[in-house]
Image 1: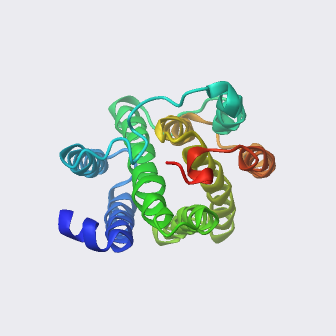
Image 2: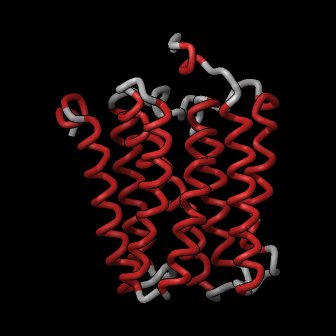
Length: 239
């Protein structure tokens, strides 16, 4: 794994993404979000990522070294925190009960960690080496969003999946811009985990779901324009 990372970093990242989509898509389709199988698989992915990063001392590269400095510069990520609660704007109505709910919430928290690390960590940072941040940002965001098409394989309605793809692309741009400008992936992991965990707890009323998607797209456009105007070490080539 280390050799592939050193010689073909983008291939390394893509293999992680493909493995995650195939394995978790299959498990999710066959066992569901509330299964112990799902949780164990996500624990395995998380452990593998953490082991690789720590063994090779890549915490700083992947934005895991600490919370962003000067958070006020990024509006304290308030736009991101607000839209992250969209899944409960229509109230609480847990999709599961008892231990199944615990498994589902824990799984969704880990999904946030794993997906941020493979899309904003592995893929985005690998593409940044080419010195084309705009391309890296767009590819990371679009790949993240399009990856949600896998939900069609789980029997999800095509219209619902299409909406989810646009929703995910919007979040992909927010997460990638926050990660790039702040130098930390930690706020993205937290927000992503909140979004997915609340999806299990929300009432999922269609009208509110569409409102949440619309607000997220609008927020993504405004917030990313704001973040794009901020200068970072990466922008000036001093990183």
